[in-house]
Length: 291
Image (cartoon, rainbow, N blue to C red):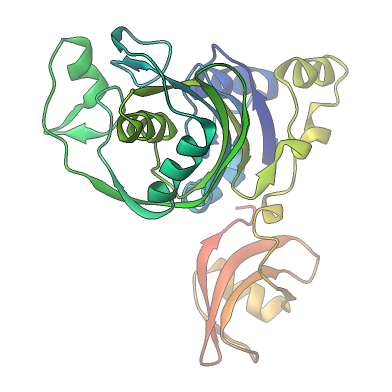
C-alpha cells in the first residue's frame, strides 16, 4: 500500500478535498489527508499525506506558510476576494509609497477577525454556512503572525503583488481587506498562489495531470516522498532490536544523548517514530512503523 507525501501544485477551481479525492482514486488508498486548506480560487503548494503518512498531518498543519497575493484596491466584496459579491467600489488615489507605508502596521503579531466566508465554527456552525443564509455574526479577533509582508510590484492602476509569510490560521484575503480599509479605499484579494507549506516549496510540487500520467505508466508511487522527509530537520538515530521491541510495545526506553526530538530508525533502517529524549529516556511522540 502507498505510504508517503506528495506535494501537489493545486489548480484553480479545485477544493483541497477535491485533490484528496482525486489522489485517493489514483493511489487506491483510503487514508488521504492534506496540510492546510486552499480556497478553490487559490493555486500552489498543497502537501498531501497518504497511508501511514497521514499520522504526520497534525504536525504539518501547524507550520507557517508563504504566498504570492494579488491586492486589488478600490473594491470590497462579501468574501474578501474577487469571487464574491461586490459591496463597494471606491476611487483609488494612493501611490505605491502609501501602500508600502500601510503594510508596516500589518507586520508581526496582529489581530484578525475571521471572515464570514470561512470554516471557523461559532455555536457549532461553520461561518460560511451562516453567510450563505445571509446571516452575519460577531466574530472575536484572533492573533496571527505576519512574519514577512513585502510589496513586490504594482501590476495595475490599483493592483499590487504582495509576498506574505504568515502563521497558521492567517487569512490572506482578510489581510488584503484590512490593508484596503487602512488606506481608506477598500481592498480585496484578486489572486493567491501558495509558494510554501509544511516546509515544502513549489520546486517539489507536481501537477495532478502529471500524477495521473505517472499512474497510467504504473509509476505514481515514485512521486511519493517518505514520511520522514517532513521531519528532516530533526536529528536521526538508529536503535537496536531491544529498543525497537520496546517502541513497538509503546514503552519508553533508555538512550544516551542530548534532550530533544529525534527521528528514530530500527536496525533494518525503517522509520519507526518521532521520539522525544528527556533525561535518558526516549518516549514516542508519534509512531510510523508497520503494524
